[in-house]
Image (cartoon, rainbow, N blue to C red; front, side, top):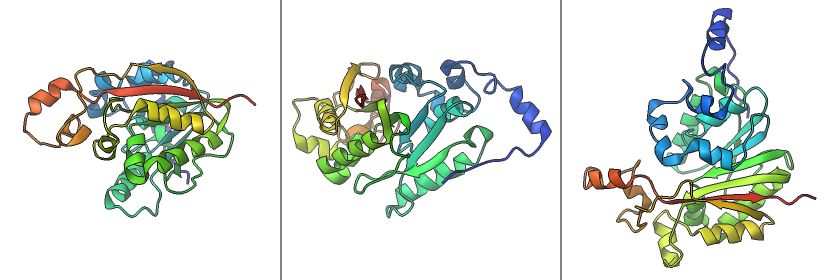
Length: 272
């Protein structure tokens, strides 16, 4: 499904041409652009979008898929960055998904995609960890990116769900294409049961599942690491910001810790 917002007047076109976003020459320009909400931009200190997207070698002329973009935190950056010279697919929750939270998230995302010109080239597709998904035409994609989602698939569908996800990503990528993965890191010495409830997942598992799907590990990065996160919170990763699952209880403590400790992995689909 492709969502298009037409420019309604010459005056609007001229105003867009004069905006910092339209004049953007670099990824940093887009990250600093007016299209980003103040709330999202405030989280850059935890999520490091410039360093993360540079690590994944994302260029403005590429075809990129973001898996489960949620409310569009990274979409606010990727959509305008790729709008003129690249192609951006947002593989969101399936339209027929039953859980109300996911339905609401998808509907809000689609509304967002219709809200401004910088989203007019976004193509919304679907991804499910429990059934084969077409996130983009096979062999057409330069980059597949997913941010803090593996743990969801593991909690919902176990190892099979994560393995199925990597197979879909492999199918969509061109030979030589890159898969970028960021997620909450479960310490390697922790019990498997912790991964089913905490929202954290082991880095070694992510590497194993990706390699089983045919990917080669290119590099790991500590861009999104946080040594203050002990990964053993009462309400799992959702205890920490931005969720604050305990409300005001010890909020200052969790704010000082910051967002979760995360692994950042770069894989490649081998050249044919």
